[in-house]
Length: 534
Image (cartoon, rainbow, N blue to C red):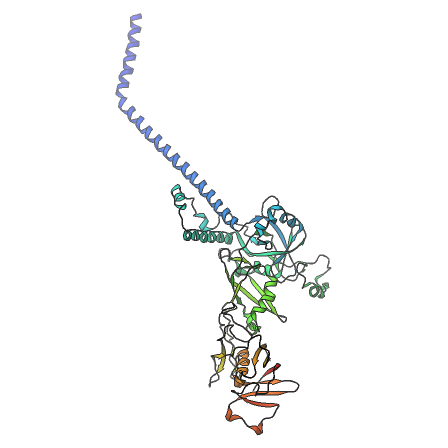
């Protein structure tokens, strides 16, 4: 019995060995395939892990890149927890770019981290104020999205870059930053502060800041066709109705910047983000007069440089591309668009403690579709000549005289057919400033304004006086006369063969072009003429 059981166990063991021999080849194949799959999954996991690490490096590099851009502008948050400061806008009086902030912001600004001269450079605090795009997520700029962190080899190459390459990288950095800001904000501009008297949670903005933020043409191309910015007019809570508002209130407070201007103009009906920045000092800018400014005889101003210095510089502390600035002369307002600034790194500069060369840009006006009147001898040019107010190559708009000694201006002369054609009018240089003897200061008034110029009566001729008057009204010298009041005298410019002694009197004097002003009856001192058409 025992022998039979032992034989059965041995038989089972032998059969198991035989089955193992038959399946030995396929077992080896299965083991090799499993190893290949394991290696493939291992490489795939390593590749995904490397991509995740690369993505993290790129994200960190992009944020570091943005931080470097912000650091170049010395951006600082005005909130206590370093988060963005958002304030609700309120309309205030003011002709420039000065906003009103709450007192809590002053406490933040006067802290040690904000008040050092190294940060401000001795200049007033400047801010970027803008309307944040509600759909904004960083990074939004396509240029930022494709930015990649440099490899180790790239880092080694960066150690030996020259100045030109560094400047190129700085320009690329500012372009990336400006493009990102264009996606972040629906609109933004720059400003300074006039006072810290606003209620907590509010910011007072003057008319120019509100117009700049609401202007659809002052937006980045990415947001130009985006969502409309809601706007509103503030209402005085103390007034029972809008009709009961005293109109004299605006007159009394209009010249006091920072005072509340209830309902004076439209403002954004959305919170504004305010960030402290340090703008570079401006060296040059181009201001383009609006069509309305040209209609108000901007180019007839006596001295546009003086007008800009007295009105513009006193009201503006910053200039940004797309801003609209205003200047005044004798109660007339002239608006100009900021089309170019130097340096253009951040498309914004500060105007404080710096000399800025102002250039008057080219303006194209729309032609009147109404049929021309043949009897109208004066025609409006549809294109103005680019001019500048620099000392070496300036342009005095009132007299049409360049600041150089050999000056020529573009006037209007009449052809035989009655059409207005462009011509050049040469103006005699004014006598030296220190010359007092034999000098007459002549003021000429006309329908569009007035002009003033000094003449040496012993050498200046009648044709020089009439050329100056012609440059003011853009007409031919023979198409008008110069008239004085009390007593009335009339001066007309004629040729020698047209002089008729019997037909002229002391009150109606016809003078030859080559007569000196002294011979024409002018004396040293001051004289005023009025232009009358013939």
